[in-house]
Image 1: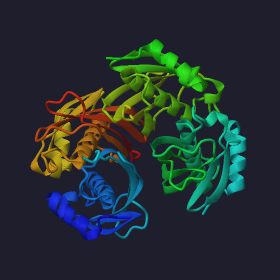
Image 2: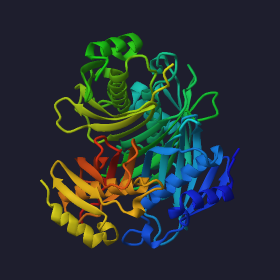
Image 3: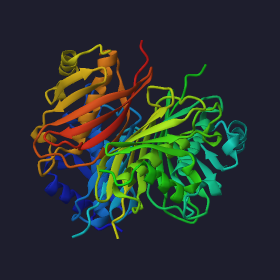
Image 4: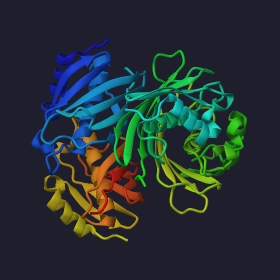
Length: 139
Length: 139
Length: 139
Length: 139
């Protein structure tokens, strides 16, 4: 069951993360996972035109954050406590990237999930990430 | 394409890892992944009867190792260089565990994959792992 | 400030982890870190005589667990939630290993630390690990 | 032994990473480690004024990259293959951050190290990271 859909998540981003909201498009938000697109801009690129590591980290992190919020609503102040990423292939130059996030555990105080990152036009994943979020107790 | 099937992998374990071969049963070996069962014994348990962290680490590590060998054959001396695990739920007491491993990258010198660990009778994963193996250059 | 010293930690191991207590010797427990020795036995070895990955995982995990208990006492039922390990060098054959653990954060609900693993007679580390433990709320 | 000192590394950044070079100041480059400062700008901040996760990832990644180059020179095209980070404390608002990187292994094809991240004015680390870089064979 999700409590925030694509439109609600996109509106949340625009309101609370105005600085980066324009970079991200929520494409899918369902009980089994969330798809987030990074609209690649010049500032996301490394020399050579490939997407930088920090931009991929941001994509994975935001995707998991929204996957959690889609299930528990916009109230929670969840924070990333751990992120482990494997960078496996060079992304395509100057094309968008897509994150496929899924929650593996949504506990009272910790949420764990993994994210696969794809470059438009490549079948095989560019990177994978696993993330843990701490969820503060409800007040 | 796999070059070692279930029988070949099980025979490899018996020959090269005699100490632990009896603990593991290769249940499936296909291009898209491998399933390995840990036949839980007393020595795998923590007080309380749940499977220990090191036993789960071993299960994930052997599953990924066999997934690599199923694709490149028994020659290679692949070694684990990184393993990141999230322990999400307490396994069931005194029941077998199952690893579902998939290769995400099989490069010339590095292989990367992830593994989901399940306790018999539980639908949700007990743990997840991502592993990197270094593959030595062919001689 | 530590609340359990070397003798108290060793006694705790003997009482609560009787199965593995004989493998481990607490050599140092101070506010800034803990040293734990693995008395390498036949069952810790891989073919070729080097210490296995699961045995190194166990060494790192127990070292961090004891480092936490040295600070908060034997009551807590702390559980590992994440472990990320890098295996960097082949350990020496048939010699003991030593873990140097340090706590980087001891919060109310999460503890984070890192561990360096050494093989007797080698100056450079064999492996490193970072671990997170969840600490259940006091009752 | 280092083959690139502070001035050489800073010049390398300015030439090859012009986009981000102004963000980073190499403060120390020695055989046992490297110190890199992130000159925190508005674009590195999250709502509330704290440094964002991607900015901390970038700081850790660049620090390890420069630590490797300080030892092998500017030729190599090293790429990050794994990064595991623990975020432990909220950084101070609107102050610089500092990375302390050390190489734990510098092999022919893989380099491994860890990085501790500090916020100016805080004694305890904000985050820690371990990173693996693949070093391409010399041509």
